[in-house]
Amino acid sequence: MTRDEAKTRLERYTGLRLEVRIRLERLATLQQMDREQPSPCGSRSEEYAREIAPIAQANRREMAEIEAAVAALSDPLEREVLRLRYLKPSKDPRTGKRSIRHTAWKDISAVLLGNAREDGVRACLRFHGNALSHLADSWPEP
Image (cartoon, rainbow, N blue to C red; front, side, top):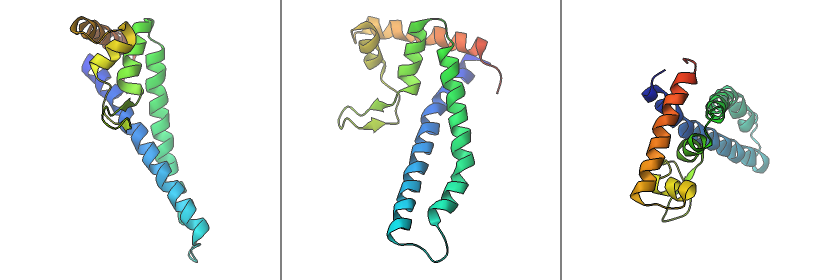
């Protein structure tokens, strides 16, 4: 696997997590609707739950594979850079709400190195590049 392929696979994590969250929220809404207004045709939530179960399971399985690959890296700084960049949901700086965007490099630098200066960002980018190389070497082809 190349570094770019490893990066692309890491970038999928956010979308997988988002899809699972949205589908489970939709299921909760349908369950609430079923309780408040039962349908004579059957449970809307049960039908939707059957529909999304294989999708959610596949997404969770891929997310677990990504998490395991990151956890298997030997360097703790490389693990943490990837965790902060790809696996941990970032927050919108204006609203404080969860965002689907990757955590900014200056924020990663502030967490890891205690500063958001350019030299800290460069160091985080170096850790990131090394982590992608190590991940690409160890990750089996999909």
